[in-house]
Length: 170
Image (cartoon, one colour):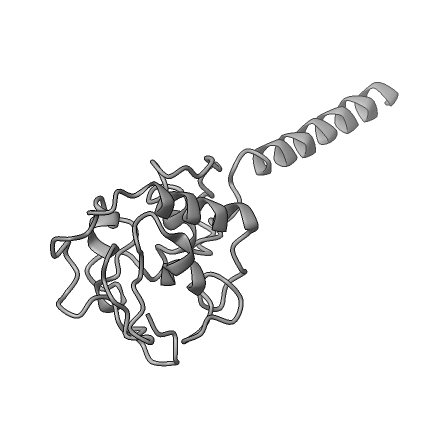
């Protein structure tokens, strides 16, 4: 009887441990979408070279991706720098990204508390960390001055408005 109880208890503990281990290997909901059926992507450090596939994909893709992105402001598809650099937002006519100059780039202001126009991005989600904001600043700093001098895929007039009302304002 003791042997049967010991085997049963050992199997129960082993099963419980497997459940914990499984939950620790990335099966939690993806925080960028909240979809419990979509496992969270493993964290990859954001760099200027991979910002669209790391930070923007995790934090911005919920709204700013594909053909339905507000005012065409797709931050995930290839060529994001050429699409948004030098484009003017409808918020106080600020440049979304000024290559080589993070301090004057509206994108960096929009992810900070109390932007001068509209609401902080990502809208209704946790604020970006200091490291994430630094990655955006490093990316903007790394862009050559002539980035975005073509149309780059945004509709004429740039990325103005928030695309959905509510004062988001790009």
